[in-house]
Image 1 (cartoon, one colour):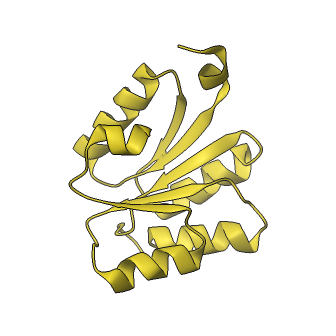
Image 2 (tube, one colour):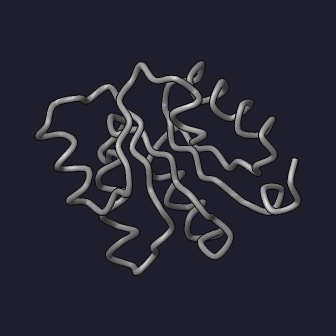
Length: 120
């Protein structure tokens, strides 16, 4: 593990517990510090507290509650928070991808995915 990775903090926003745990454990094994949330409100609270430390956001699009991952991305971009965001979602239509990029995402991966895609 490089010292640089150990300093990098990733926010993982994923409501499906099995997927969240799998991604979290793999990112930690790669040496990253991972903050995780199962819903948009929790993610926004984490961002408020750690916005200067987060270096990457990995957001699911479909989430429980009134806000989805797209709304979270739009909200942080409106606040001038510019860490890269990757959407990781089952929504695979072109319109969905374009909506993600329009919201301010830097990349968009569809489920199912290979872990190597996420780590690349």
